[in-house]
Image 1 (cartoon, rainbow, N blue to C red):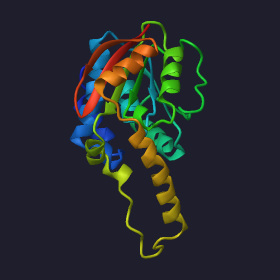
Image 2 (cartoon, rainbow, N blue to C red):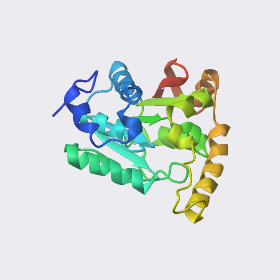
Image 3 (cartoon, rainbow, N blue to C red):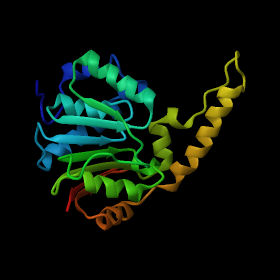
Image 4 (cartoon, rainbow, N blue to C red):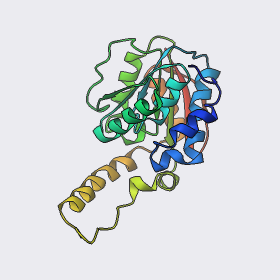
Amino acid sequence: MKHSPKVIDKVFWSAYTRYAETQDMTGAEKQRVEQVLSRLFEFGASAPQSVLDAGCNSGAYTLALAMSGFKATGVDFAPGLLSSARRRAAELKVPATFEKMDLDKVFWYADNDFDHAICTSVLHAVKRPEWVLDELHRVLKPGGLLIITLWLDPVKHREAFPEEFTEPAPSSNNPGGLIARARQAAKSLSEGKRRAHYWTPAEIQQLLTRHQFEILQSQGAPLHTVVARRA
């Protein structure tokens, strides 16, 4: 069943939020998903074209794409997030595909494999953003759309996703044990990576242009959205 091309309907969101993580149930997350969908349709994408969701997290965008009639594939490196996304897809009977893939290491898709791609709140966090853009260019068909969202302000980013930056207090059963130390080590490693990639709108436009993308639209703050076309 194809849903409204402009806005995912209330039936979908009512069902979806029963299986969503806390961040996906917020009005802000819903608005972000609908904005990306509307940009796809505004700039010429049409179902049932294929769309790659590069860094799909727990699957909100991928599921919304599939519900809108696209052939949607979400990839992420985290098995837990993918399991959650697959569970939601099964519960909602949404024909979305989810696969494990580390954007920093390998894109196993063939050249020109996808009609369009999205990369939402991800590019700032990868180790090799230029590699990721090169690979997105490679797997997109000529003329395919790439929609990127990224945070311009690390403070606003923290406010939007506090669970990514706030370390839970140690439990009474394990106050500072191995698991807590491992979590802190992982957070320390990722924190520097987050700080490394906060671009200005002009900088991200230049980056995309260097990787043979034509900028169609660039707007918004503190979450900036760029619509580009693969040359």
